[in-house]
Length: 637
Image (cartoon, rainbow, N blue to C red):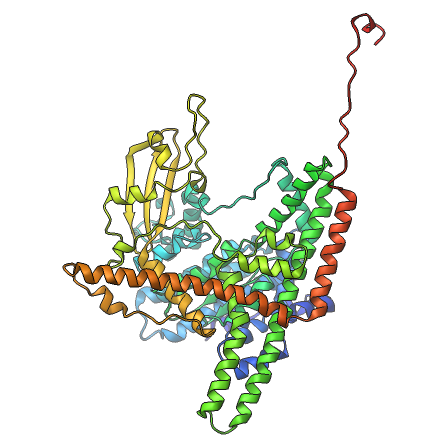
């Protein structure tokens, strides 16, 4: 019997009783519209997964209410959220059971399956107040690990370079001894219990997690203003994040990802099989965790805060009270951000309508002959022109994280979209050139060579802030400048297939981790980018990788030539990505409804005019003068 049926009324899907306003419900349902359905029919793949997601839009508002203020959320809201997520979990586990019949499954699989499902059933019957996304995700991870195993070193190394994976790695650590009962041997936490996974996650080195943490540049204002801004942002209701699990899918279509990304809806894939990313074969657990990490890397809310802070610094420079300016600055940037997103969504739908018309026209050339050369050529051109906008938007927003504060600070939509595209490739690169180890997955540089290469890394990028030394005329900026303050005996080197890592302690007691991406990883990531570029007709010809890697060490000339080819190829990919981003700007301006662009420009102009009226930049600053009383006036004063 299927688990969902066995649970009966325990998982009665209570969302049907949750009252949503017609307005809010229609907004969420607009993630996918009739134009999406038609494009999905004519251009298979670009909207993969949208039908499964479209079935779940009813839960988005309930999740946002619950996430925004759990105390204020109604019992019906919370119950619907719990029923939804646990329902997805049990649907995934049902599929896993079907793929591993009781006759063919091992005793260990059956025992673990029962262990995981029993815990989930207890959660389904537990207190509503016990529900939280952290515990739900523990159950998902345990089920995914049962489906695919823990992944090889390369797959785990891939996860090690992204944030939001502490729960996954906590599940892989050994179960704490105090949780083991008599007769139980050591085992990974995920094989023991959700409690063991949560315990290990809390114990993961906080410093290791801190390397992913980003902070806004507060400028001249006081740091405590951050909490005031956060409160205002919450009141302004910037779009809340929603996690939507999708059972049975690995890769999701580009258009599906773009439309959900713009709505702050993040897909948690629950696949059963293998799929590749960055040149590695990922199991279900690693693959799902890798895709889910995009949510944790997402920088958009931080950049909205940065735009607010930049505006507040202008108020400070104009000698205006900064705290009083927070509500106005926050309202401006949140409203501007929302409208920018909505304008991009309209651009996507405009491209969809144009492409549908082009594909229909191509089909009409030979309705009964899919192999007709003229029809195939026109269909290919229509898809390329569509991807010039939408695949490029996917790259710019979700892969390059190019949504920066300067986009919101632009005076017009044209300037904003230009800034968005110009932000591609502007990040300070953290990796170093390891091409001479191209022939091996792991670095074959000596420890001394690796350390020599990281000397140029800035202390600021590594969050090292040495105390100023008054006896020195210059202060250290890079690791190379800071050598006398490093405990050289503490140096440790790790050569992984994705990251080459250097760890050391400073004499002041700080532990430092320097991670650099291997050429093996960079090349395979570039190959993924090249696949995206092929969608817009800009892909570089692939090199004969097997032949290049097979060159013997004795063929020095051949290996040097191979490295030169790889450098050129990587440069071409990088150049084509920037060119694709540049072309996006023109495409957005040409295919977004003119009235929407005008509306955005009017909003920004009105905000800027109001701000200048309240905080005039050129207002003269009057410094009050204090008269010091004369000595014989002291008594009267």
